[in-house]
Structure formats: C-alpha cells, structure tokens
Image (cartoon, rainbow, N blue to C red; front, side, top):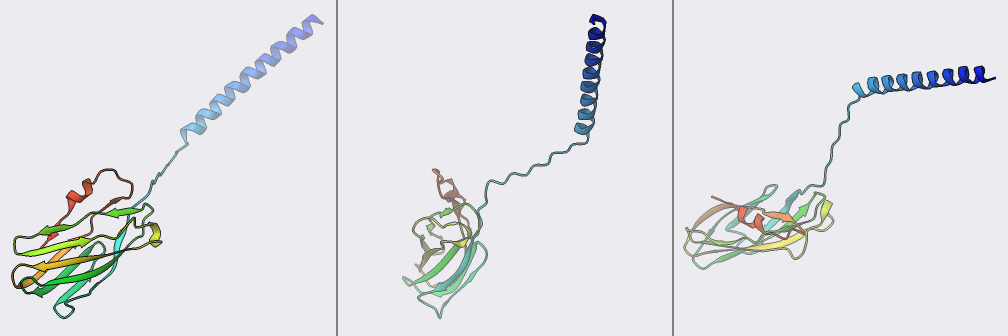
Length: 168
C-alpha cells in the first residue's frame, strides 16, 4: 500500500507541474498578442455665440458672430455710444465663466463688456446673455473683432483674462 501511495503522489505532482507549465506557456502566448488601448476624456469646453444684435445705433452699427468672436463695424461720433446685446451657449461638458473685457484703444474706442451673470452651463442648458457698450472719443469708422475669453467655472485663478486679444 505504501508503494501505490508514492506512485500516486508522484503522478499527481507531475500532473500539477505539467499543468502549471502549460498554463504559464499559454499565458505568455496570450500576453504577447494582447494590446490594450485606452482613451480618457475628462471633459471639454465649447462656448459659442448664438447671436448678437445692436440695441442702439442700429442704422450705423453692424454685428456678425463667429464661433467665438464678434465682428463689430460701425460709425460713431464723439461721445456717442452703441449697445450690443449677445447670447452665448456652451456645447461642452464643463460649465464656464467669462472674462471681463474693458479697455480703451488708442484710436479712441471704448469697450465695456457687461458679462452674463453666473455660470454658463453645459450642453446649452443655460445660456448667458450679456451686453457690450461701445463708445467713441472721436468720430470715425470703426471695425474690430472681440474674442470670447472664458475659463472653467470653478477655476480659482483668473489667468485666462490675460489672453484677451483685440483684433483690428
């Protein structure tokens, strides 16, 4: 009985070793042909102008909207001002807030952007409505473009304001 037990034990150990060996060979072969491709997207910001409309000076001011720019063309006399109403939507997945745009340009144009209040939500659920006030210190024909400057809604830094560009 002792001889049969040793023989059975030897066969059992041999079968276990061969099984583990084949398992290792199979895993190595499978691992060699295995490709893991991963794509991670955390979110995106995609604001755009829905429209813009001059409220005052409609006969002398024209407004055209691009995706993230407003082109303003018009004639103003000294100390005259025009008001333009605009709407912005965010088709991205991260809510945004807008940067303040206020400046006086060398040629006498004054621009004051009154921002939409609060956060512009995602996927167009809550649009932002704002106004741009334009004034002139001297008479002239003005043509310029304002670029939409924005940042993530919960950003603690306002660095995005520094990227404002005025295009003649």
